[in-house]
Image 1 (cartoon, helix red, strand yellow):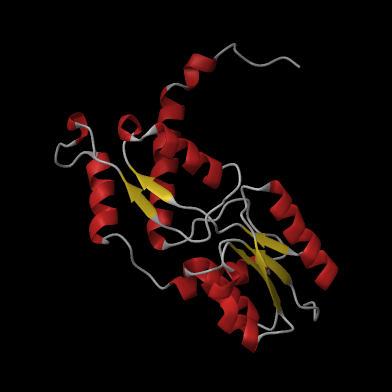
Image 2 (cartoon, rainbow, N blue to C red; image 1 turned 135 degrees about the vertical axis):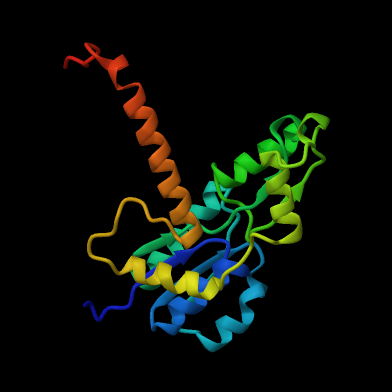
Length: 209
């Protein structure tokens, strides 16, 4: 095991899972570079960890700020070992009901830059066609609104991610949480069944290289 502390760059570290992971990293004696839009949100951590925590203002949809954050981390600590992209948010809405500007903003954050510094959710009214009881989109809305599906200890999750980062041969994919494992197994079963059912359709369709 390496005695050199790992250096983590964590986006969206102002609160929630991002901050929790930063706390876990610091508790393990490692180094955290925490990026967020409002550095004052981590003032308490910065005061108690002056040598192992670098807090940087960063809007991750702005390439210049992202590059500056990496440059500052490398200048201060010499390298970056782990990048944990935590910045992001969700929209609870059917495609047809989502305003275009909101959809573009979400794509900008979650896929093109991870701009937000904490996880949240924005709700838009459902179209009439999606208001039926038991429809998947309604189930998701209820899941977010009443919090019935939100459970678990974020610190335990952060600690699991920390342990995962130390694996010598980590898997390409990791289902985090028992509910996720159940979903993955169901997906594997469904894909396997469909593949077997239509396997003969691929006869004589081999790709010749």
